Image (cartoon, rainbow, N blue to C red; front, side, top):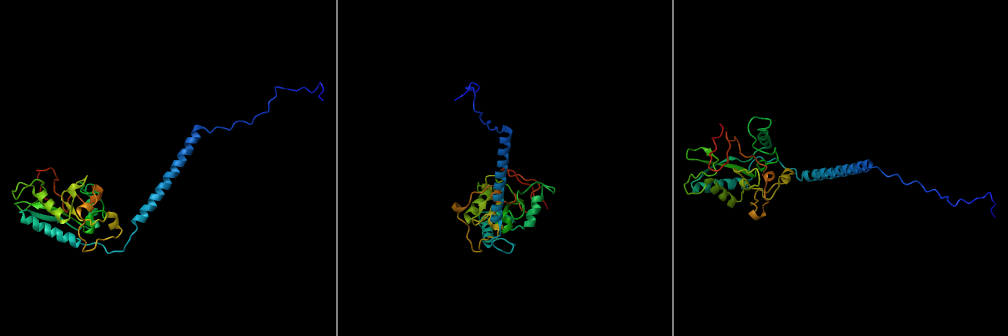
Length: 249
């Protein structure tokens, strides 16, 4: 029973807890940025670990010091078959050591001259004895790099006739690559990548060239070879019909 002094306040409301504080937009963006940074660092760590595993040596092999026997034999055959068509060629470069490759890489960068290669030592098939470079010998006995020179007078470019023979013998031609086309370059990779070769994989001496259908399509990073071998021409021009100047002495 209520007395008169006990008045009921019908307008009284139970106080509600304060609403949760909303995070500011800046705090949310900062948190997202931190999470993205952690994800990127984690991904880079995994990629670095993967590269370390992939680049680990798979075999302890002696360094290559000469052309692969099959490449040497096919190069000789290429010279002979070209001669039978009235075309003289010169193998201007074959095996190239990593030190020689590094010296080429420095040209146009640390040393004087024009850039002649995109890769350092160990990244060229020349460094593993699996590539050669060639030039034509004109009627004066000079080495030339003219893509339209027709010294045997059969109406067909001597250069492309040599390339046709080389492909039939199992070579891949650098002129077919999608970028940084290396017209004097011929190689037999036997299905081995540069990464595999760097890790110590080597094609056996009696390995035949891979068939054309089994070869990987090459780009500039697949060629990993210099544009010209040995001493490059004084002025390089691969425009059809333009004769390259004599090689530097």
